[in-house]
Length: 432
Image (cartoon, rainbow, N blue to C red):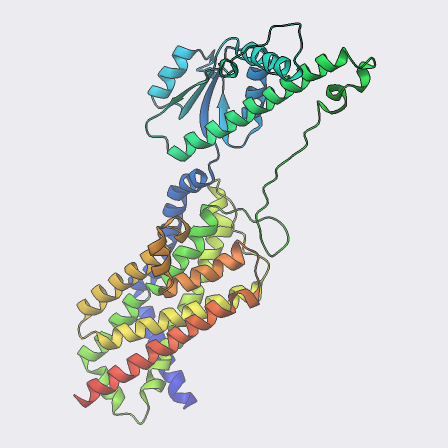
């Protein structure tokens, strides 16, 4: 039995090596896909993370609020801050024109006297609260409103989420400076009652930021793995390439049928499983070689283009188990399609279209978390989605072997199911 298996492996290896064009495409095609799709989607992933929004800023206030907003935008990773255009300080007119011309996505204009307007309104509110007699108290509370009108110029191509992010950030800065002004005004009023001004609330707490926010990506391992185009595209298109092996595999099986090789093999005292094991072993090895090559692209070549380095997580055994399960699932699918197809055209068209469909719904082209809810439910039927979910666990969440066991088992069940279908179809065709 071992001699027959080795002979089958040798036969499949020779057939594969003779088709140098087809063999090279199995490795070159996914490499090109990874390069192209990662470069294209790099900006898209930055968009999803909403980082680096091009903003031109004009500070006509020249006071506390204007400076506070400027400092906040400069230090924020949300935007790429600019206060000049072509080396000239931006004005309201030049900022509007720059946004109109598409040089910036958003233009923020802080009006003159904005801080003083807030200060005046806060003073009225404080005096109403303390009911002081130094300044007449307005009888109509509706008259006490913030009258600051911050203008935001928006490029029509800008996503609504960008505008929402910028607006909420500006509101945060305005609320912060308004709170400080209110606190200081209260403190000034109380200072007239409290003799020791060093113990006034403003001096004690005015410079303290009580609540702080920090973003931490929740991963199971140590360190922080940031989602980016590399972390998605390298495993995604590697899985796609492994399943796309259906083309040469199915084509090889159909060619053997047409040439009569299968009939001669069936005359040998060997089962279908022994004969097909040679193909399985050879193509699983090819899939694993594809996987290793694609990892090298993410680890070595993509960083040369200024893209992030692929982080493969903390579990090498998990990577080996999941990649092997994916290789078996892809090979089993190829064997099934090759057994079902009657002509090379059928194998090529049906195999390629089925892989494209499974990859589309499985989150290879577009991550499932940006899909509509109905598509997220449908995506779980795709074996490519099982493999991609497992690599997400390893590459993004820092998971280990126990976190990818379920996905690996599902892929191996898929392999057994496809091989069972192939065996049944082969038996039926032999009887015919």
